[in-house]
Length: 174
Image (cartoon, rainbow, N blue to C red; front, side, top):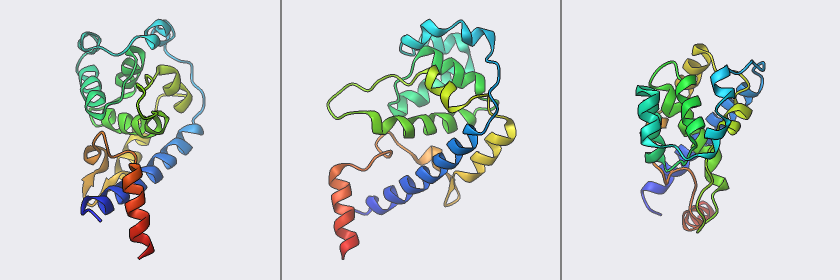
């Protein structure tokens, strides 16, 4: 077994539990009226995020665009705008994008271009913008061996490949 596989599996297992808890708590949020400017941006939920839009959004838009590109998470301009809007601090951006990538990764079929992560999906996940307390709770919960799990996850760490799963199953039989 490769040395990286147990660590990858351990991180993926922790990530799954963390995202499941975050999603469960988010589902209990009361539905809030969405800001008017987001209601008006439905057309942007069809357009892939761009660096130009990230510049227009500002610093958190740039952070969202770059982190999404690093994670290989294609998103719409409206999703990028909503991510920046929901983030009350820089650390919230990678937190949200790690959750989005984890939920999006299983939907990507081998050999096919991935679909865009949309504002509609964010609205379904978060019926109202998360509070600072919500972000702090889930930021603390994602710690892994003294580090931030959201910073340790690379674009290929969200799923085990068929080869990795077979290797892990073989190792567990021993």
